[in-house]
Length: 209
Length: 356
Ligand code: SF4
Ligand code: SF4
Image (cartoon, rainbow over all chains, first blue to last red):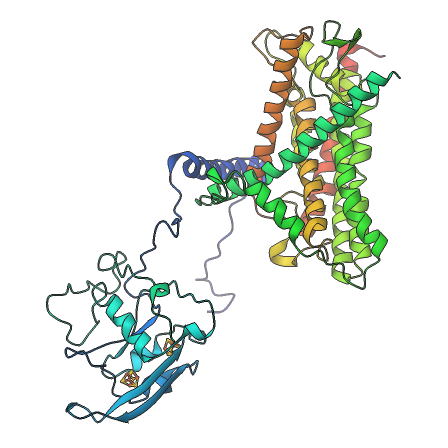
């Protein structure tokens, strides 16, 4: 469309009246709005903030927090050491040492001998979760990732598996075959999420020794 | 001057300075609370019940923080600037009356006690403005001594703002001064109290509404409060003249600003809200006994508190002005309007009172 197109509709802002040009009515209107919020939050209890740590925030079901390594029905780590997650990771924070699967693990050739995620470098993008062909790695709803040293935030295999133990009841595996007694998550974007998510916090994890 | 008189004055100075500096600590907390409430948050509530110990915690933080003096600053001026800020803000209270004094006022040795550090200063309001304008030295010295282009520009920007807004501020009060024919703040209150029509008092906000608006807007700009706080403008400019200041020296600028807010609230209450005058309850100008005087002190403090809350409320309502808008408002709107107000007042006074 050219600037002189006859079909072009020009919108003019409405002229301000003299009173409006002083801005006083608008200022009073603005004061009324903030006044309502001030009174509401001060006396009406309409403040929307969560009083952490007394109240725990419950993130939505698609929140991306601390990782976990899922276990299969026999309690073995699901990961098959294919390195797809480590390859997909833009922050290069996954370090896997694969090894031939032990005797009796008939469904796969390899398993991770060591699986370390540097949570300090992780940007919680969820690429690893997307990349994993067997849904072995998932991001949980744990958000209070804290530690007293840098080493504490480098999660090894046992720690990642313990996150699974901590969160498996509240957050069943998104796909795969979780045990049928567990409640299934509702639609992933349901703002309320599938009820209260994990009540455990990352700080309760055993520290790496 | 007798020894007891000096003692009384010293007691008054300590009381007033102590009360107001303590009040500032709690004003900062109130400001944080109002900020939180207007954004549907809860605000500081960790230190003590309802967060009431928060001001102590803030103060401790100010004192315990590392006090950095950069190596490249002009040290004497750098240290002097925050001191000027706080001294200029404090000594303005000398002439502010907090309550009435009359023939039956409470006395010591037959002399009435004035609720004022320096009573009967005939040029009261001029003194307040003269002292108030000293604040600009703190700003410009702070910017200059920091030896940093950004701070210097910030200081210039802010001093231009303060000086510009002093003109409409001064012009807007002349109306009240002409009406009450006095520069003494107590007299101005008495005039408002006695010249009402029936039970409606002649408060400045009613007889000089335009001057009230101009005064209020200029006062916001004078005290660097939003929407005119280009001195700080944390979001866009990362601080102005006080960028190089840390810990308690920054705190002193802050304290000065808040003391300024109290002064301005007092001036508004005195000039435009009738001071300690309470309409409709039959407390006249003559009532200056103990009880009446104390009630009146309470009334004026209540009005001042309302003003302070209003100033904070505005802060969280209006967005910040751009610098050219700020200057346009002062020179193209406020000053002409203030002059117009002055001329109209002058003409009306001449018409109704006759010449002389
Ligand atoms: S969430 Fe992203 S950054 Fe973190 S480990 Fe997975 S792929 Fe890497
Ligand atoms: S977690 Fe998944 S993607 Fe990563 S190595 Fe194991 S199986 Fe492959």
